[in-house]
Length: 526
Image: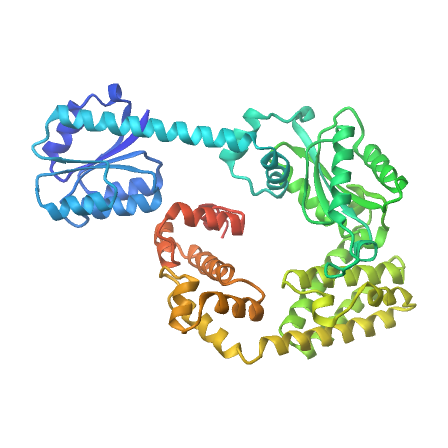
């Protein structure tokens, strides 16, 4: 049964349509009938509907305006206009809004019934097409393996997709509880080389090999998360997770191709608690630096070593501040952050091996540079042989001196790139985008405005910012949208338009992909 809203400012006409049309026989349920279009709009904003039937000429808010606002919220909405005004301009605007019917008053009952039957048939076809697309998507091996499991672990899969997937592919979760697992290759920089190194081997091959082993042992669904990590939902209910994962570590080490460290989250209700379990696994992986590699970090690791777990989190926070200071060329801040970092190190309850700490610092720095499309090789010309020198450090002071000197050098390189001859142009582009954010901006239009070819301007923009023009534009729109969502005065469809999206559905999809929540859920949490 499709849900419909009726709107007509003439009481007699509204009541006549509500009573005289055999709605249920057609397959429609009238969920709201209103004389006031603003009241109808308020209902539409808070409810899901399939069909809007509205008078086209009404005071305060016309049927055309009502339809436009309703379609911003739901682009798939079907609309039938009814009007006593045989003005061609109204008809043209209705057709521009993709009206599914245009009926003149006085309304002929048979005519409106036939129109509604045609609209219902179109809705049936649309629903069938969506079902077929969902079935194809779910049947896709790549979706099952590489997309769904990752989104399930990270908590970014939407409820409808989760429900559809689990109906078609129910996961055998013992007693409705499962633990998330994070598996990380050890010593990636030293075993595989830096990304820009010509001698670099492929760590993703090792990740795929581990995934095949997981499948052979029947441990549960898994997904690669990066070139050196994979996530696993442990569903082998007939065995002890800690013991089986220890056996997995031993098997991988026995193959002579390197070792892995595994962190285990708490067993939580499936699927509601899966993301929380995976967050626990990621937090516990920070203890690798203290507990060592080639082992399983169990749930009691952080509870039994509370001080150590806190130190791991403190260390991660200080590293984040340090890298931010480096990016902004804050040399004094870099010194302060390095001092804070090594103050944390000095409070460790357990001795930290120089080699372990060196590897941790280098890996974190290289990973951060990758987020800027940079690396040790691209900024400093380092090859793996250069990085191997830090394995020779014998004291924390040696590491501290190396780290400060390296951060200074990287900060200098980034600063020079940022302030090159084209920096003024990039600043003007950024100002232009911010000024016209609500418009339908494209790289081509901006390039024409500044008298550049799109390809050349796109290259300059990415060279100086580290991200493409489109990535920058979407990021800026999402940041503005998040700020506006925290202000209850704005409707979500208004925010979508003000940040440059004409389609509310597309805005919601982009927002969820970037933020991990729908705009409505983000507003509730803000």
